[in-house]
Amino acid sequence: MSSPRPALPSPLRVVNLGLEGFAQDLAAAGVPVVQVDWRPPAGGDPALAGLLARLDARREQIDRANDAAIGRVVDGEPWLVDCVPAGDALGLPARVVLHAGPPLDWARACEPMRAAILCAIRYEGWAADDDAARGLVERGEVHLEPCHHRGAVGPMTGLITRSMPVFVVENRRHGNRAFATINEGLGKVLRFGANDETVVARLHWLAADAGPLLGAALRQAGGIDLRALMAQALRMGDEMHQRNVAASSLLARALMAPLARAEGATPMLERLASFLAGNDQFFLNVAMAAGKAVADPAAGIAKSTLVTVMARNGTDFGIRVSGLDDRWFTAPVLMPLGLYFPGFVADDANPDLGDSTIVETIGLGGGAMAASPAVARFVGAGGVAEAMRVTEEMREIVLAEHPHFRIPALDERGTPVGIDVRRVVETGITPLINTGIAGRKAGTGQIGAGVVRAPLACFVLALEALAETLAP
Image (cartoon, rainbow, N blue to C red; front, side, top):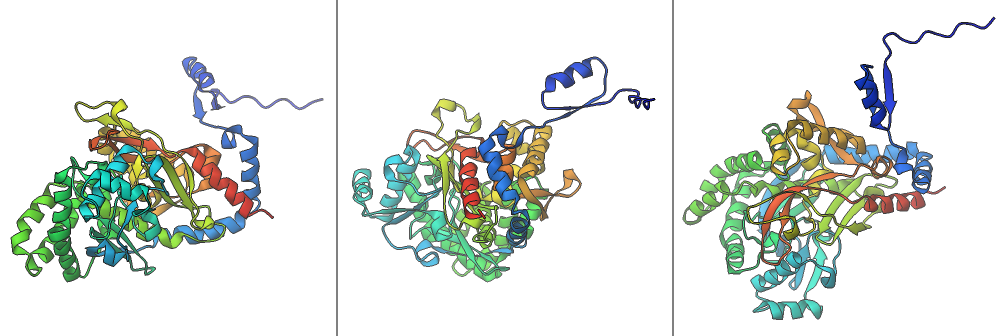
């Protein structure tokens, strides 16, 4: 005699995998149901699933490498220590223009990038007008190079030339340094491809007055602990990419007394103070240099699948991976989605650009959206609930929670940090990035703000290279 079948639970409870329609029908019938958003690994692609399986065979080695890499990111101690000309800080020679993103040929550059490069050449005095500047680039007499190749980062177009002042961030845990220019403020600025004489005049003021004064103040202060400042700003509603109001205020407060004590400060202090007070994005460039300073020590760890760089130049999106040295993996950059300033629409926008995605690699920006629901509304991504959802989604593709960057609204959980190539490809979830939106037409400047996704193709290429590198 066969044993009786076990009775079904009463009342019936259901877990539904995949298609939501089944769960909706059950819920409509009054049956308690839990919907699980399950998807086959790598979207069901057998080739990619095979690559993931090959890497899984080396899981213990990869996990050890990733533990070392993410440890270097989260234990970094970035300090803002100086502001000096890029020629001195980076050893940057004349006739070199650093730009955001992966390597870029002039022929493929977007219009805002081209306009900014020509403006930077005029600013340096290498050419009198755009036609002469363009000739220098086309003849190879001016060399274009990514900021990341020199230990630097730049927002949007990201341009750095030798006389531009750069902030110097020192990672006191690992001894390396990173650099970024002074944020110009909003409106028509070089980083958004604006290129008229007001842009050049502001750049000269930053080089002649603001940069030297900020450098003197930072040296007088003995540096500023950025990790502590950023952790505090996160608690005050910043995510340090699109929203930097709190961080900029905290930095200005830390600088006020040293600025006042700096030798020869009096004639310049009023304008600089007004500039700081009116620039809510002042901290962005500092956050980027801090991100570069803490991410760089994690590079070059064999077998690690950690993403150490994400960057875009308006044409390509590129990533670098710890275990693959300095190789770039690129794909066409995507268009941001968001809100536009009055008079502008989506057709006026340029594809995404800038090195500011470095903050997403260290647990800030889009992944920290739950700490900054105001940003979610500002960029058109919804409110508190959507901000929480984004942060939870980013946890699916990272290696850890940040021990220092914590979100009060999530019971002090750390922000998701350490983007893992394997998890991106396995889940199909790509990093979400908060970003400004530049006008497509040269000289327009910023026209809005929004969010954008990293293209999956970059991560697929990196996964293929990892599988080849780690093949038995």
